[in-house]
Length: 178
Image 1 (cartoon, rainbow, N blue to C red):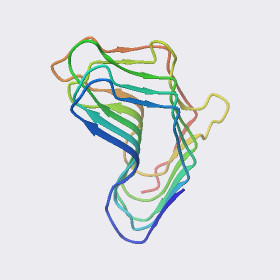
Image 2 (image 1 turned 135 degrees about the vertical axis):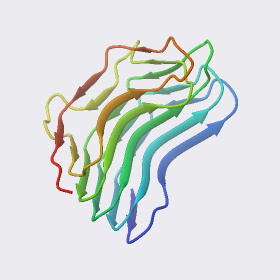
Image 3 (image 1 turned 90 degrees about the vertical axis):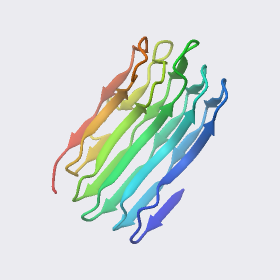
């Protein structure tokens, strides 16, 4: 459990791997119980993998039970952020779950379930689909802020060939209060 309180803008990261080599594997982890209150701003990322090599994996991880209660803040929450190599073999994000996220308060709070950045060549859900939110809970992901609410975002840059299949994005409740 990670708790932050009061004013601040330092990023909160549950698991972070930065590497310039290929073959990193983040598998079977759970990040839960992050609670931020007060006038926090900045980035909250449960799992951050910035590995410039190829053939990296983030598989079967769970991000849940995250809540922020902030006022007038610009909070950016991301369940899984991934940046990998741009050439074959592709990196892989399979069987991950991001659910039970509540962003309350005013301001430009934003939610991103799973995001790839840079020039990553990735396969997202091609073997085992990822779940962002829930098909059985209509309020699994809640964002009361004015920022964007996105399930899965894949950015390739100059690289092409990433594949996104078999994923579930459901159970979002967006009610702008800011």
